[in-house]
Amino acid sequence: MKLLEGKTAIITGASRGIGRGIAEVFAKHGANVAFTYSSSAEAAKVLEDELTALGVQAKGYQSNAADFNEAQKLVDDVIATFGNIDILINNAGITKDNLLMRISEQDFDTVINVNLKSVFNMTKAVQKTMLKNRKGSIINMSSVVGVKGNAGQTNYAASKAGVIGFTKSVALELGSRNIRCNAIAPGFIETEMTAKLNDDVVQGWRDGIPLKRGGTTEDVANACLFLASDMSAYITGQVMNVDGGMLT
Picture 1 (cartoon, one colour):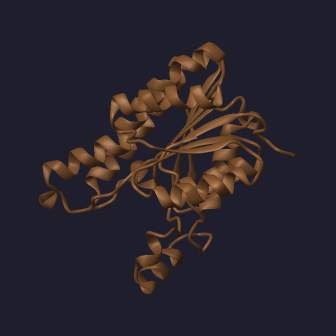
Picture 2: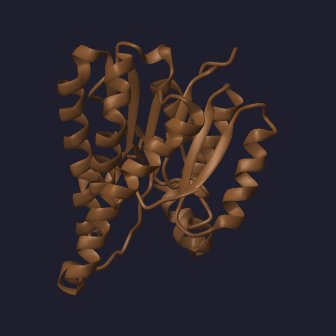
Picture 3: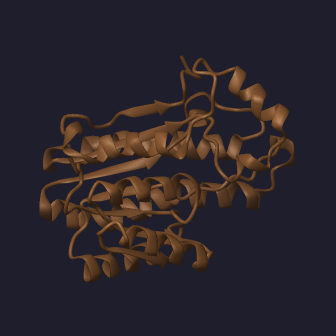
């Protein structure tokens, strides 16, 4: 059974990692996928071909969601090509970790812009279409760090906590129009980024998680699939921790 048959999703930051995993799972469930990437046109083309081979419509767009006007243009372009937007996944994000005393103003501003302002930009851009349709599912990528904080990540934690507050507010504003908005808070997910870390550090993290393993991109993608599909029709304004029990 394909849970997203005929629906169109926008996924920001999908050429690698969690975003790529979401795009793959969504396409397997019948969704047409418009996705953004920041720099790697080659990786985007590979993903586009992979998704198209699954029998859905797919297109990558080089677009910066942190730029208000680019977000508006992206949505206009997606509607021109795909005809509609049913699902928005705000996944684009970066880290610039450092202790507070060493974080520059620029590193704080950049992380807030990419991780939080992009969510405002994209949600505002798709709102008109979803209001017209009187339905839609918006899923924002937060983090366990946005729920509990983390030393050395004041900028990242602030951005991800902001995403949660924004999510709950949008759920309250748009619920009467049957537009749902939820957040996902991933824990330690093993991606290309974590593969560069020291093996002992990674194992230490795994040992501290009740399920004794890091998460996969598919673990996060499956949570997104549930929240994007009609299976979660009565769920809005929630934060789903996908963390192996880390915050239990």
